[in-house]
Length: 303
Figure 1 (cartoon, rainbow, N blue to C red):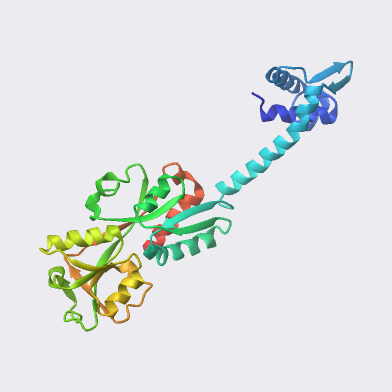
Figure 2 (figure 1 turned 180 degrees about the horizontal axis):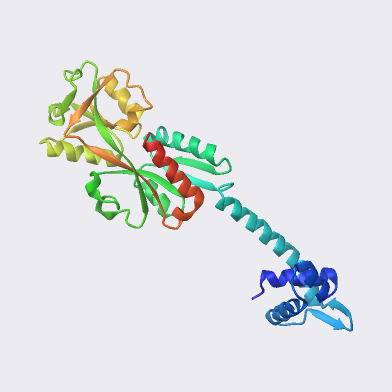
């Protein structure tokens, strides 16, 4: 195998015309240059230099190798500089995927702080709900996935049923679900409402994972919710409730960036929280730009 250090020696010999001059240029001894040239010729399997008295010239193979060495060494230098920039957070990119309420709340704060601290790091953002966002991470389509699961801390660091056991899981916050009822609803003025008190109301449900959680909570309270509408769009859920078409439960995070016109929020018992986490692959967690992004997401969640 041809080594880069041997190519540097060959180029120095070709440029200076002798081992001794190449040694002076490279800051080493003449025997060291001679040994490295022997090693390079052994790797190449053919002579690269012709020595006639004090003169030294390249063979055809030597000329070809020097010609390629220039581009190879230039490419290696560029690669070393780029890797050093990425390692030092002067460059790099992170592909982030997040569920919509995270994209509108946690992500802007985190990315603004990341840009201020490391302006050379670029981050792209795509919206996707779990489990699709987690699939994208495993398929190599993103570097960090903002996701959530229900079930509280009892679900463990690997997520519910250990579904994230192969990933690095950075817990961010516990996001409580709140009730949303029309302004004219009989319970609109209450501070806290038992979810069973909403058993006779039509419901507006959210994403599939949220919808499944809603049904489980309602069934634990002794009823099956009548879901008239289902949408992944939180502003649409709020609009439907505000129009008097039903009631809903939404994460507090989803209400931060949307004004619930025509609707009132109420605390719901029993309390239900979804755990917000940032996920990445173990190897990616060691990439400086990815680690910095995880840190900023954690800081944003602790605001």
